[in-house]
Length: 226
Image 1 (cartoon, helix red, strand yellow):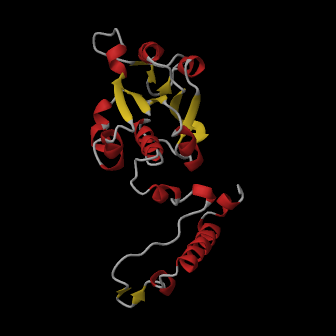
Image 2 (image 1 turned 90 degrees about the vertical axis):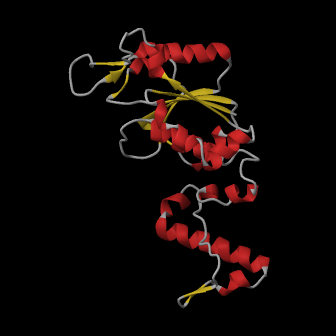
Image 3 (image 1 turned 135 degrees about the vertical axis):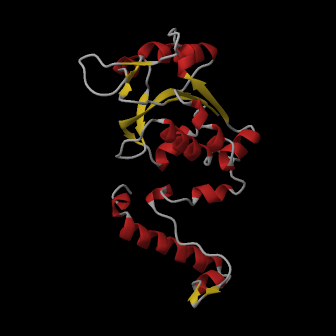
């Protein structure tokens, strides 16, 4: 899978993309991550890619032309399954969406900044808007990192133990069960006996019941989607 990210701040990405699961996915050649500087596609001698909004008001707006050139250049080189814009008013990005997007081949993630992106970009190029929550970030870069990570971890082969990703929270609309490791007794707080029993059937039943209980307590809204 290939993910192309369009941003005004490419320097934000190397740290996140150069470690942990995303680094492993790239090294295994299961994922390509390419970050593109939108400013490289402007004719402005100062490399500006934003301007004041028509109609007045606070903030700056990212210009349509540099973004259009960047997208069109990429689309001339390969076919893309979708262009996704990071936006507070976008569709809620969740585990099911991550699973769905992990099956695609080539996608573009467009990061907004400042007051937003010229609406004509959305009208002409964007397949879908995505939001990672009901709050506003300084820019779409953090959202693009989150989405890239969520997609990468469910690509077959990225995580050595494939069952690990399938048992994550939000798979099957359930939160994960509690997990424990050594020591079995920490200051009088013991690991549940069932986890030490060696009886895998009882362990699986306990974990499933814990998932149901925890989801009812913490995120009952998830059960409404079953």
